[in-house]
Amino acid sequence: MTAPLLDFAVSTDPDGTTVLHVCGEVDIATAEQLRERLLAEFARHDRLVVDLSRAMLYDGVALRALRALHREAVRARRQPPALRGVRPTLAKVLKATGIHALFLQQEHHPFPSRKPQPQPRPALAASAA
Image (cartoon, helix red, strand yellow):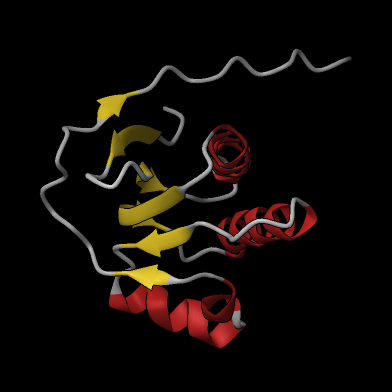
């Protein structure tokens, strides 16, 4: 059995905003990967947009990753990243859970000014046994 695949790419909008593109299915097997990447990119960039147009986030664990991002923004006293490309089904889930009120939402821009470049996956700390 193969592990579920979750990929990320980063591009830059014309105004200099960094865009994190999330591609794939977020479920119990990949939610921690999403949470870690969201928090890492948020720490790395002053202006960040999270593009979810090619992601499937319908599971509670995926929504917890978004809540963790919002908590970090509040802790850091920063504006949370905007969410881009939220599909109608996800928009309903975000609204039903109240998460829609935590993030600004942008329409999807299908042709970024710079092609997203695959990013190396950050090394995970070895877990103590």
